[in-house]
Image (cartoon, rainbow, N blue to C red; front, side):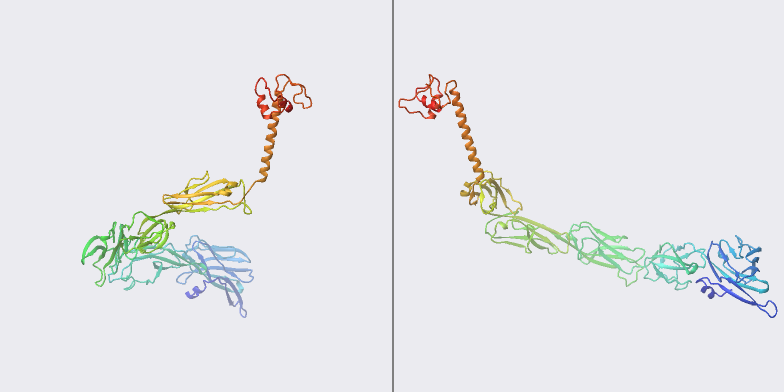
Length: 607
């Protein structure tokens, strides 16, 4: 049997033990037999393992025996075999009560099916080679078994840290592991140095120990130097220890520097470090007297919708009679209720001023802690002062002014009050000037849109010197401006008089004139007009000629200037003066029925 130190050193890697024995074959000569046997074989429980024992070199015949060495160093033969060359001729096995039994393979190696922890022994191989002599070697078998998961049995009673004797808090066990695993204890994930034997210091719990999570773990060995670990479920101990300190605080989310908003619900939270949970008494100090508010085990007091008159000093006291005499079991805090009343302005919701006038508006606020005031106009900052000064107001001064009171350290506690400033005066007018289309001149017929803007109070009305202006309406961008537009065609008349727009309200009016300068005629259009007139005149003359011919229907020579016969009866004749009547007169006269006495020759000429 090898010493333990030698066994531990052999676990690193399998080695071959070559045993050389010098034996006397007969007087005067020596024979040598060498065996190949691993000194240490490692296997997991349940696996099959084979122990090798082979003589080195060439041997025609040898006899092999396997022995089991028990704890008293006695040998028990397990198998016997004869080998001729590489063939197994004969064998004999003894199970020694093992199930399943030992086996020999064709090479004489010892096979242990389903290795068990009880198989962890020394196995001796003896080889006899006749004249060469006898040799033997030992193989040690180590069987590893993974232990079952650890089980913890905690003490279900109440452990008092005030006791002076050792107390067992829990036991940890793990079964069927080989070699025996190592058990370690942990508290809140950190290893604990626990002695292996119970003594006066072993399981003492210090007074400073508080609630903690415990568990244990088993650490075990595996073949080839590997290791494994299994952890138990965590458990907690029920410890009994007195209160040594007390915490008391406000639980409201809106708290800042001890302030709470009026109307909020506030929680007063108290916590002692004793176990089991002690009893808590909440009180309010008034004139140095305790006014008890609540006694409970929960450690919290809720004040619903606190008011400003609830400001004051509140306290919490822990009732723990096991606490040490020097322990401070009572704590106090100051509850300060912040409030902010509605703001007051020195003017109403609307304030009217004439142009260039001045005034001041005062904003008053009452609250605790003292609020900060600031003014804004249409959301733009104006300054942080209770009094707003307005000097020489203009139309730009008009708008909505807001006073805001807030407390920087108290979120969501603020108030606002606003007024609207109206600036009265004659309207202010602004025009969107037009530009010539090209090279500084307008052309007759160009289309142009004119826009006028005005502001004032009362709101002005916009009118135009030409028809077609749009109704007065608020201009884009606001700020009190209104606008109106006019779309028209440029003419030569506009170049002289221009177009004017006027803004008026009950306090006055203002106007603006749009000038167009030189307006060039449209030559191409003028030629077309002349041609149209000429065509119209030609068509009119043609109609007259056709009408005249129809009136002379049936007379020879009508409409022929070269033939001049006597006029038919009933036609007009020349006047006594021998002059012809005008064509227009002849026409008018010819329209009457029965003929005429004058102008007949003239119409005949015209025929």
